[in-house]
Image 1 (cartoon, rainbow, N blue to C red):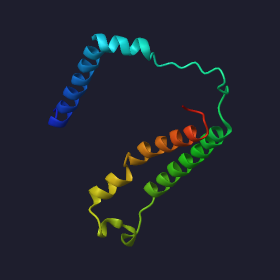
Image 2 (tube, one colour):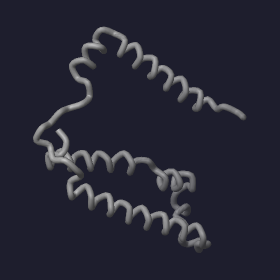
Image 3 (cartoon, one colour):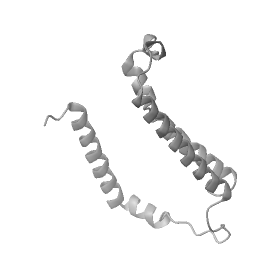
Image 4 (cartoon, rainbow, N blue to C red):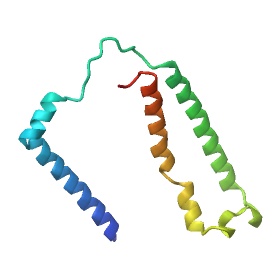
Length: 123
């Protein structure tokens, strides 16, 4: 098994961040910060349960995921005509990278948090 330079860089970065976090939490400032902000907030007037808008959004998200998987399996099982390929204009590697982009998985939670803050679910 060959280890590439990018994998080594990733491992070194993770190790450095873990060491920095340990040193930070062991310091006096880190201990004071954890004592002042433990990460839990007691809000006596907060509603209990899942808000209605979040419940239906989860159901809608499940529907979209099922449709995306179904479409992907359908496309994979058929041979498309050459005219349907977008690689005439863009390199195939770029098309695959954009198709499997993680940008959507970074933008969507930001929208959910913004809506939750707007309706007072998150402070």
